[in-house]
Length: 213
Image (cartoon, rainbow, N blue to C red; front, side):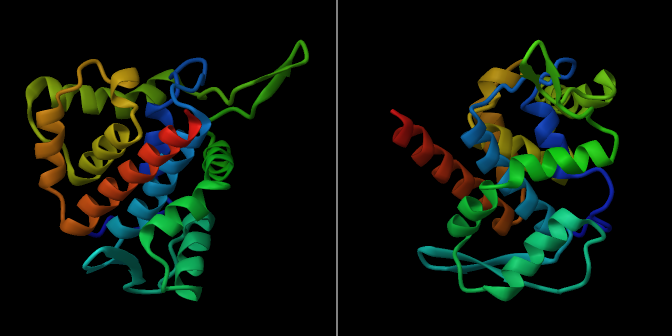
């Protein structure tokens, strides 16, 4: 399951692109839901790189550290260090904790990587951080749409991406077609810890939606 050096293009970057317009940078999701999804993506990056996994205790999915090896990326390194320091928290707690700052953190990382332009102020109105290259920004969503069209599950990282897009409620807003049965079958191909990450992300997103009503 290892994905190697976390300094390369990441799951959270791809999710950010999917839930924003590839030209304007306009958000497709409410900021709270986007933040919870991005928190799940950062944890997913650590899982894919085999830095953390889940202790699947009955009724309580807890993150625990497999290795403290550096991630090569300040954002995921900071997340890993938090888990190392306080390993007793369930994954739901970490999703809420990382969601407090993850939107700005992921956006800053993508600006540093020259994937996004910095937000600009125009006529006293703040403009979103637009992608530097529209094709690069469109590619993660294009991969998902192609997999759905062909009914062929994508590579493991894109299976996680697909699951998180669905978990945040972004499928109807972003995907050309949403096939709930295919989405469930794709998620079922993942290792159980990644399945549980997606499921718990969907739970906290659902709670956030209810609390806003």
